[in-house]
Image 1 (spheres, rainbow, N blue to C red):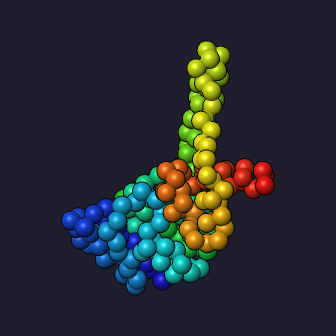
Image 2 (cartoon, one colour; image 1 turned 30 degrees about the vertical axis):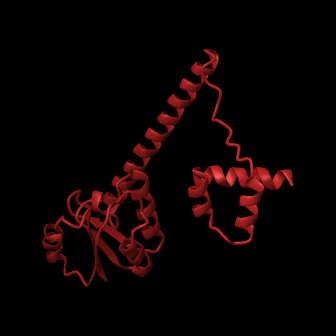
Length: 186
């Protein structure tokens, strides 16, 4: 089945340009949404990923319509690949069902990995210099005086992790660490 994923970032934008570009592919199923691509938690994208089956071809106008970051793009392509679904991008002229398309995505993945490794290396070097100069003390340890009460509410399912993190003004990973530390202490 030929499937199209069309996305514009806001309600006042028009998706017509993308739709017209797809009409020549005899699309059988359309997934169209008006939402930011800040992450992959988009209703129509998730529907598409659930709907697509082995042998299907997903058409997009360009990679930026599918994902904002290279990591998200590669994760989506990997998920499609595992399901036996090909991805065709009009603008980049890449078809993951062809050897050339697979090569291009492998190169994009390698560049992404290279960038990530370099970033982490620069970060480690910067931290080492800051430590030597006495300017780096590590992340601040978050202390919440009545955490036991919050933990009890979470364990009693009175509040979700996300809601509790918002309530405490901390991130989910920080809350996970606090819960782990608290469980270790009790």
